[in-house]
Each structure stands twice: as structure tokens, then as C-alpha cells.
Length: 295
Picture 1 (cartoon, rainbow, N blue to C red):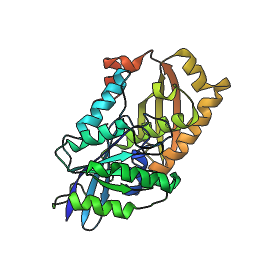
Picture 2 (picture 1 turned 60 degrees about the horizontal axis):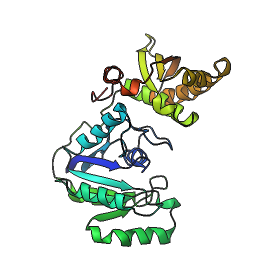
Picture 3 (picture 1 turned 180 degrees about the vertical axis):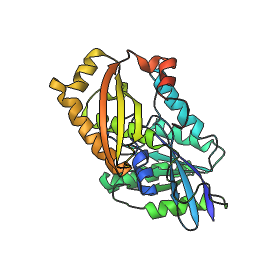
């Protein structure tokens, strides 16, 4: 049997979370078209008869412009420290830049095997894909083009991963698919719906705080009470909407996904509050669960 940890690294919006979700076969990380969707390391575990792969989904690589982003970049760097191999994901729709090449060289400087995964090939012109592969030929790195959405080349990617993983026992029990708690996933579902509904900077200045997460005695209903923390009073006004319309709509979408995830009815209560510039407060970042590892 082969087993090991695989870090999934790449720029923001390279398709890391989507790929991990598809490979694991369950939604273990939220996804949206916006950068900075993933804020911390999230593990997704794929278990089959003769192998087990623990994928470490990481925040996208970009220049940090606040303390939260610095914490996120540290989470990505830390993920490289104790893995068996690295998948470096690259969305090359705009070609391959010098910065991309520099990142590839940086990944190759690690002490573990690195595989370059070209993503979203289902919406990439074939001639551009061929051109990118030729351009990368001099980098002496194994390249696997994939489409997570269409399932293209995923079996080939698994074969390549297994080629580099060591032989060993299972890392986790058979039914484990993530290292994150249900409570953490509930907060991420709420944040995902906000990312999908609201535009510009508002979603990136939002944190979700779970005040109550409890199953009623009848075992059929979860009571969930949470705060949506934003940075500015005008952001709160937008999140709440006229007569509370916006928060009602986004909460309804979130509740539906929460019920699907938990397999039970959910009674959801949401509040919006302002904590100005919380993303630059070390105290508030810690209070809100960033940089503390698993929650």
C-alpha cells in the first residue's frame, strides 16, 4: 500500500480547492471565482483499497497586503515542511510568465518531488496548451494537464502521484475525509455564500464566528447561531440589505448547503457586526481562528 501527504500549491484561483474536492469525491473546501477563498490549510483524504492520499489544500500564493494575508501565506509555506510531494497548480490561460517560472524553480528547491499540474484545460485552446508545455519543457519537471470540472486526466494524475508516494500504512481511518470539524465547515459554507453573492472587497473583509452549534435532543435539528464580522459600517449595510433582504437571501442559500452537509434540518440565526480593520489585528485574527491550525 502507498500513502502520504501531498501539498497542493499555486497562485490564487489556480483551481486548488476544486481539484482537491473532485479527487477526494467530497466537498472539503469551499470554492468561488474570487481570489483568497481558501484562508488556511485544509486536508482532504482520498482512501482506496491500495492507497491513501492526504491532500493539503493551501491559500493561493500572492503578495500579502494585510496581516491576515500574511498569516495565509505562512500557512502555505508551512504546508511545504512535512509532505511527501508537491502538486504545483498553474492556470496558464494567459501563457507562462517569468514569475510562474520563478515559482516553479522555487518549488523544485524543496526536498520532495514536485509535479506541475496545468489546470482548467477544458476551457483552454489546444494550441496554447501545447505552447505552454513546450515552454516548460526546459524546467525538467513532470507535467500533467487536467480539468477538474470535466474529470480530464485525473486518473493519470493519480498514477503520477502514486509513483512518488512511499509505501506505508494508512494515515487515517477509512471514513475520514478531512481534518476539519463540522463546525469549521459550517463557517466556511457561510463564507462561501457571501463570496458568491457580494462583489469587490466586502467578502474578503468578512469572518464567520460560530456562537452556537448544537444538535437538539430529538437528533433531527441543528441550532446554529453565527456572527458575520465585517470591517466597515457601510459594508454591514450592504451585507444586511434593504429591510434585511440581502442577509436573508444569503442565509437561505447557506442553510440549504448546511442541511445537505449535516444531513439534518438547520435552524440558522445570523447577525452582522463591525470590527474595523480586524484583518490587521493579531488579537482579532487569533480570536477568529486564523493561524491556530485546526478548528
